[in-house]
Every structure is written in C-alpha cells, then in structure tokens.
Length: 216
Image (cartoon, rainbow, N blue to C red; front, side, top):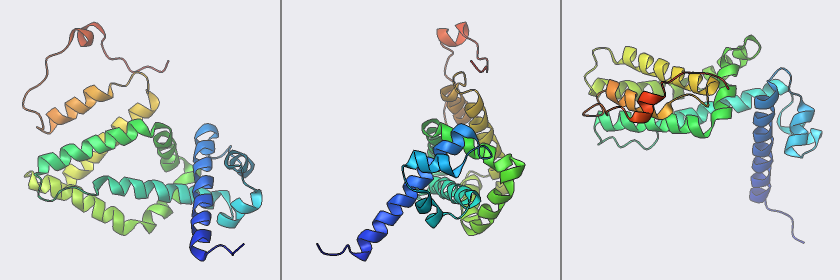
C-alpha cells in the first residue's frame, strides 16, 4: 500500500480539527465554558485526548479557535454584495443574512453572546477580535459605505446604531426563542429603513395574539 500523500494528510488533519471544534461548540453551548471539560469534548468528538491536545494545548486555545471561527463567519456576511446594486438592496440583503443566520445557528449565537460578555472569557474574545482588526475595520467600512450611499449625515454612527439594533434582536431571539416575532421584526426593520413602500395591514392573528416575550 502506497503512503498517503501530504495533501491527503492535510485534509485529514483539517477534518479532525473541525470535528473537535464542532464538538467543543456543542459542549460549551450545553454546559457553559466554565463547566465544560476537555474530556467531554473528546467524548463528543469521539477522538483521543492526545489528538485534542495536538491541536489545542488548553481549553482557552480551543475557546479562541471557536471565537476566531465565529468572527470569520460574521465577516463573510458582506461577501458577494453586488457593488452595482443600490444601497437599499445591499442593506436589505445584509439584514436578511443576519436574521437567517441567527435563526439557523441559534445555539451557536447564544453561546457567542455569553462568551463576549462573561468576565472569564471576555479577555480571550478581545484578543481574538484584535487579531482580526483589519477584517473588522473592512466590515465596518463596508456597512458605513452603504449608509453613506443612502445619504446618512454620519455613516459611522448609523453603522454603530444598526449593529446595536441587530445585536439586540439576536440577543432577544436567543433568550425568547419560542415567543420572539422574528418575521414581524424583519418587516419592521424594512419599514424603519424605508425598504418597503407601505406598512402591511395587521392580520387577525396579530390582533388576537399580542406579542409577549416569555420563556416557556
């Protein structure tokens, strides 16, 4: 049997690393970062402790890799926007991408919100964010360009305000998953930024069931 090629070895290593990261993400989401153990990660990933240690010497290194992967996925939300499209179309696309990602990756979103603010993990998050400073700046500038093209007097403030609103939506969705009216909020965001021509008439269901954010 011929030896495996270096390319195949690299692919196998990459798959092993991704398998460990996926398992760690699930374990951290279920148990919290502080309570989670490397043993739980190895059991979930069905790999040896030695293999995890080969890629990540400590739990903090594993955390940093998860945060880095998450930030990378956030920055790709602006990929492929058509520069020839009007600013309204670009803003509409970004809003939809953010909300769709939040809906599809809710457990991950909930974990990331915790990791960003908890004292025990915030320092690691800040370090990872600094390592991605160039991409973060490019991300911010792309959003600010949209608002500048829409005629905003201060695109930087508009970008910060928009992100604050979106992150508030993500937080409430993470907490009140079953009762949060994500589709209605999307419609309202469209209205707020003038992305729709008219306000839709309230339906009978809307009138009969007022929105209350509650945890079941």
